[in-house]
Length: 243
Ligand code: MN
Image 1 (cartoon, rainbow, N blue to C red):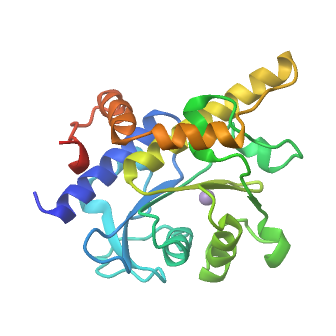
Image 2 (image 1 turned 135 degrees about the horizontal axis):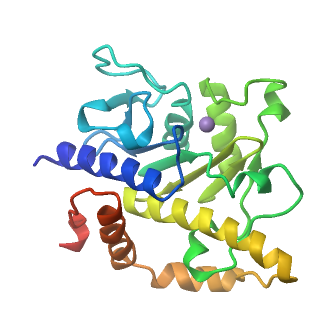
Image 3 (image 1 turned 90 degrees about the vertical axis):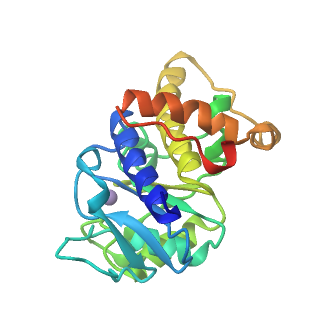
Protein backbone atom coordinates (compact mmCIF):
# COMPACT_ATOMS: atom_id res chain seq x y z
CA UNK A 1 0.00 0.00 0.00
CA UNK A 2 1.42 3.43 -0.94
CA UNK A 3 1.70 6.25 1.59
CA UNK A 4 -1.24 8.03 -0.07
CA UNK A 5 -3.40 4.88 -0.06
CA UNK A 6 -2.59 4.33 3.63
CA UNK A 7 -3.57 7.94 4.45
CA UNK A 8 -6.86 7.62 2.56
CA UNK A 9 -7.58 4.33 4.32
CA UNK A 10 -6.86 5.88 7.73
CA UNK A 11 -9.08 8.87 6.93
CA UNK A 12 -12.00 6.57 5.98
CA UNK A 13 -11.54 4.69 9.27
CA UNK A 14 -11.40 7.99 11.20
CA UNK A 15 -14.75 9.07 9.68
CA UNK A 16 -16.39 5.79 10.73
CA UNK A 17 -14.91 5.99 14.25
CA UNK A 18 -16.06 9.59 14.81
CA UNK A 19 -19.57 8.60 13.69
CA UNK A 20 -19.63 5.47 15.88
CA UNK A 21 -18.49 7.44 18.94
CA UNK A 22 -21.13 10.18 18.47
CA UNK A 23 -18.77 13.05 17.60
CA UNK A 24 -20.21 13.51 14.10
CA UNK A 25 -23.70 12.65 12.84
CA UNK A 26 -24.81 13.36 9.27
CA UNK A 27 -22.53 16.40 9.38
CA UNK A 28 -18.98 17.15 10.48
CA UNK A 29 -15.71 16.14 8.81
CA UNK A 30 -12.08 15.17 9.27
CA UNK A 31 -9.17 15.94 6.96
CA UNK A 32 -5.50 15.02 6.76
CA UNK A 33 -2.67 17.06 5.25
CA UNK A 34 -1.50 15.34 2.05
CA UNK A 35 1.38 13.00 3.08
CA UNK A 36 3.49 13.95 0.04
CA UNK A 37 2.47 17.58 -0.53
CA UNK A 38 2.02 19.86 2.52
CA UNK A 39 0.21 22.43 0.33
CA UNK A 40 -2.68 20.03 -0.27
CA UNK A 41 -5.08 18.19 2.00
CA UNK A 42 -7.42 15.18 1.76
CA UNK A 43 -11.11 15.39 2.73
CA UNK A 44 -14.21 13.45 1.74
CA UNK A 45 -16.78 14.74 -0.73
CA UNK A 46 -20.03 15.98 0.80
CA UNK A 47 -21.34 12.87 2.53
CA UNK A 48 -22.29 11.69 6.04
CA UNK A 49 -19.10 10.37 7.72
CA UNK A 50 -20.30 6.80 8.31
CA UNK A 51 -21.15 6.39 4.59
CA UNK A 52 -17.67 7.42 3.42
CA UNK A 53 -15.55 5.08 1.26
CA UNK A 54 -12.02 5.47 -0.15
CA UNK A 55 -13.33 6.71 -3.52
CA UNK A 56 -15.06 9.65 -1.75
CA UNK A 57 -11.76 11.12 -0.54
CA UNK A 58 -10.84 14.20 -2.58
CA UNK A 59 -7.62 16.23 -2.78
CA UNK A 60 -7.72 20.01 -2.29
CA UNK A 61 -5.34 22.93 -2.50
CA UNK A 62 -5.19 24.97 0.72
CA UNK A 63 -7.52 27.58 -0.86
CA UNK A 64 -10.19 24.86 -1.17
CA UNK A 65 -9.91 24.26 -4.92
CA UNK A 66 -10.35 20.55 -5.71
CA UNK A 67 -7.47 18.96 -7.63
CA UNK A 68 -9.40 16.27 -9.51
CA UNK A 69 -13.10 16.48 -8.51
CA UNK A 70 -14.36 13.78 -10.94
CA UNK A 71 -17.89 15.12 -10.53
CA UNK A 72 -17.84 14.83 -6.73
CA UNK A 73 -19.44 17.59 -4.66
CA UNK A 74 -17.14 19.03 -1.94
CA UNK A 75 -18.19 20.08 1.59
CA UNK A 76 -19.35 23.72 1.80
CA UNK A 77 -17.21 24.20 4.93
CA UNK A 78 -13.89 22.91 3.58
CA UNK A 79 -12.37 26.40 4.14
CA UNK A 80 -12.04 25.45 7.82
CA UNK A 81 -9.43 22.85 6.92
CA UNK A 82 -7.34 24.80 4.38
CA UNK A 83 -7.25 27.90 6.56
CA UNK A 84 -5.90 25.97 9.54
CA UNK A 85 -3.27 24.07 7.47
CA UNK A 86 -2.20 27.42 6.03
CA UNK A 87 -1.77 29.02 9.48
CA UNK A 88 -0.37 25.99 11.35
CA UNK A 89 2.43 24.12 9.51
CA UNK A 90 2.72 21.55 12.33
CA UNK A 91 -0.97 20.53 12.13
CA UNK A 92 -1.46 17.30 10.17
CA UNK A 93 -5.15 16.63 10.79
CA UNK A 94 -8.27 18.73 11.47
CA UNK A 95 -11.74 17.74 12.74
CA UNK A 96 -14.80 19.98 12.48
CA UNK A 97 -17.87 18.70 14.30
CA UNK A 98 -21.14 19.63 15.97
CA UNK A 99 -20.66 17.26 18.92
CA UNK A 100 -23.77 17.79 21.03
CA UNK A 101 -22.43 18.20 24.58
CA UNK A 102 -19.81 20.73 23.44
CA UNK A 103 -22.21 23.23 21.80
CA UNK A 104 -23.84 24.61 25.00
CA UNK A 105 -20.43 25.87 26.17
CA UNK A 106 -20.13 28.04 23.05
CA UNK A 107 -23.42 29.88 23.68
CA UNK A 108 -23.23 30.53 27.44
CA UNK A 109 -20.70 32.10 29.75
CA UNK A 110 -19.82 28.63 31.06
CA UNK A 111 -16.22 27.75 30.18
CA UNK A 112 -15.44 24.26 28.91
CA UNK A 113 -12.29 23.03 30.66
CA UNK A 114 -10.60 19.65 31.18
CA UNK A 115 -11.76 17.92 34.38
CA UNK A 116 -10.45 14.42 33.58
CA UNK A 117 -6.91 13.40 32.63
CA UNK A 118 -7.90 11.81 29.31
CA UNK A 119 -9.20 15.18 28.06
CA UNK A 120 -5.96 17.10 28.65
CA UNK A 121 -5.52 17.46 24.87
CA UNK A 122 -8.16 20.19 24.73
CA UNK A 123 -5.96 22.60 26.75
CA UNK A 124 -7.17 24.80 29.59
CA UNK A 125 -8.10 27.94 27.64
CA UNK A 126 -10.13 27.02 24.58
CA UNK A 127 -11.08 30.11 22.52
CA UNK A 128 -14.63 30.71 21.23
CA UNK A 129 -15.03 31.94 17.65
CA UNK A 130 -18.23 33.88 16.95
CA UNK A 131 -18.97 34.28 13.22
CA UNK A 132 -21.13 37.33 14.00
CA UNK A 133 -18.21 39.37 15.35
CA UNK A 134 -16.68 40.02 11.91
CA UNK A 135 -19.31 38.69 9.48
CA UNK A 136 -22.66 39.76 10.98
CA UNK A 137 -25.81 37.69 10.46
CA UNK A 138 -24.86 34.62 8.40
CA UNK A 139 -25.91 30.96 8.23
CA UNK A 140 -22.97 30.39 10.66
CA UNK A 141 -21.39 28.10 8.06
CA UNK A 142 -17.72 28.74 7.27
CA UNK A 143 -18.13 29.01 3.49
CA UNK A 144 -15.30 31.40 2.53
CA UNK A 145 -11.56 31.50 3.11
CA UNK A 146 -12.05 34.88 4.80
CA UNK A 147 -14.22 33.20 7.43
CA UNK A 148 -11.86 30.22 7.66
CA UNK A 149 -8.85 32.48 8.22
CA UNK A 150 -10.75 34.45 10.86
CA UNK A 151 -11.49 31.16 12.66
CA UNK A 152 -7.84 30.01 12.30
CA UNK A 153 -6.76 33.36 13.74
CA UNK A 154 -8.98 32.82 16.81
CA UNK A 155 -7.73 29.22 17.17
CA UNK A 156 -4.18 30.65 17.10
CA UNK A 157 -1.84 28.07 18.71
CA UNK A 158 -4.57 26.20 20.62
CA UNK A 159 -5.56 22.56 20.12
CA UNK A 160 -9.29 23.25 19.83
CA UNK A 161 -11.74 26.13 19.48
CA UNK A 162 -15.49 26.37 19.99
CA UNK A 163 -17.69 27.90 17.30
CA UNK A 164 -20.64 29.80 18.77
CA UNK A 165 -24.00 28.20 17.94
CA UNK A 166 -22.34 25.70 15.63
CA UNK A 167 -19.70 23.29 16.98
CA UNK A 168 -15.93 23.19 17.24
CA UNK A 169 -12.62 22.54 15.54
CA UNK A 170 -9.94 20.22 16.90
CA UNK A 171 -6.40 19.98 15.48
CA UNK A 172 -3.50 17.61 15.97
CA UNK A 173 -0.26 16.19 14.65
CA UNK A 174 -1.88 12.96 13.43
CA UNK A 175 -5.29 11.55 12.55
CA UNK A 176 -5.18 9.30 15.62
CA UNK A 177 -4.38 12.20 17.94
CA UNK A 178 -7.15 14.42 16.57
CA UNK A 179 -9.74 11.62 16.74
CA UNK A 180 -8.65 10.93 20.33
CA UNK A 181 -8.91 14.62 21.28
CA UNK A 182 -12.33 15.01 19.60
CA UNK A 183 -13.84 12.00 21.35
CA UNK A 184 -12.50 12.99 24.78
CA UNK A 185 -13.59 16.60 24.26
CA UNK A 186 -17.18 15.36 23.86
CA UNK A 187 -16.83 13.03 26.89
CA UNK A 188 -15.37 15.85 29.01
CA UNK A 189 -18.24 18.18 28.04
CA UNK A 190 -20.79 15.58 29.15
CA UNK A 191 -18.91 14.99 32.41
CA UNK A 192 -18.77 18.74 33.06
CA UNK A 193 -22.59 18.90 32.87
CA UNK A 194 -22.85 16.05 35.40
CA UNK A 195 -20.17 17.40 37.74
CA UNK A 196 -21.81 20.84 37.68
CA UNK A 197 -24.99 19.39 39.18
CA UNK A 198 -22.99 18.07 42.15
CA UNK A 199 -20.96 21.13 43.06
CA UNK A 200 -17.92 23.24 42.27
CA UNK A 201 -15.52 21.52 39.89
CA UNK A 202 -11.77 21.23 40.40
CA UNK A 203 -10.36 21.33 36.87
CA UNK A 204 -6.93 20.15 35.74
CA UNK A 205 -4.21 22.75 36.24
CA UNK A 206 -1.95 24.00 33.44
CA UNK A 207 0.88 22.02 35.05
CA UNK A 208 -1.16 18.81 35.12
CA UNK A 209 -2.14 19.24 31.47
CA UNK A 210 1.52 19.76 30.59
CA UNK A 211 2.61 16.67 32.55
CA UNK A 212 -0.09 14.50 30.94
CA UNK A 213 0.76 15.62 27.41
CA UNK A 214 4.47 15.03 28.04
CA UNK A 215 3.85 11.43 29.12
CA UNK A 216 1.46 10.71 26.25
CA UNK A 217 2.97 8.76 23.37
CA UNK A 218 1.84 6.92 20.24
CA UNK A 219 0.88 3.94 22.47
CA UNK A 220 -1.84 6.10 24.07
CA UNK A 221 -3.57 6.78 20.76
CA UNK A 222 -2.89 3.27 19.46
CA UNK A 223 -4.59 1.50 22.34
CA UNK A 224 -7.74 3.60 21.84
CA UNK A 225 -7.58 3.41 18.02
CA UNK A 226 -7.52 -0.41 18.00
CA UNK A 227 -10.68 -0.56 20.14
CA UNK A 228 -12.43 2.15 18.16
CA UNK A 229 -11.66 0.28 14.88
CA UNK A 230 -13.31 -2.81 16.37
CA UNK A 231 -16.41 -0.84 17.41
CA UNK A 232 -16.64 0.87 14.00
CA UNK A 233 -16.16 -2.48 12.19
CA UNK A 234 -13.04 -1.24 10.38
CA UNK A 235 -9.76 -3.20 9.96
CA UNK A 236 -7.07 -2.17 12.43
CA UNK A 237 -3.70 -1.08 10.99
CA UNK A 238 -0.93 -0.12 13.41
CA UNK A 239 0.37 3.43 12.94
CA UNK A 240 3.72 3.68 11.08
CA UNK A 241 5.44 4.89 14.28
CA UNK A 242 4.00 2.00 16.27
CA UNK A 243 5.05 -1.03 14.18
MN1 MN B 1 -20.41 22.79 10.55
